[in-house]
Image (cartoon, rainbow, N blue to C red; front, side, top):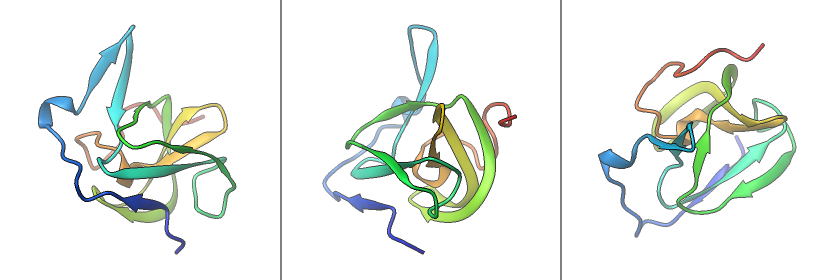
Length: 106
């Protein structure tokens, strides 16, 4: 498995920061201290579209099963669709759940 992210061990998180609503959209925090690759599909074999900066928050439009990835929030095959053609591994997003938190992608 390719390395998906880089860690900055100085970062911390607060449980109150798990979910935030901004202008009607729910966003979830990316694991503190990580820059996370955003991919064109649900696996590390898909191309990198962009890299999320440290302390990012992401909306989750839908979720789908894909390649299993290990991260700070465990090992999961769930991938979060954050925008059209943009997926991040759920193992790097603090959703507060081991399962889906929104609808499956079509």
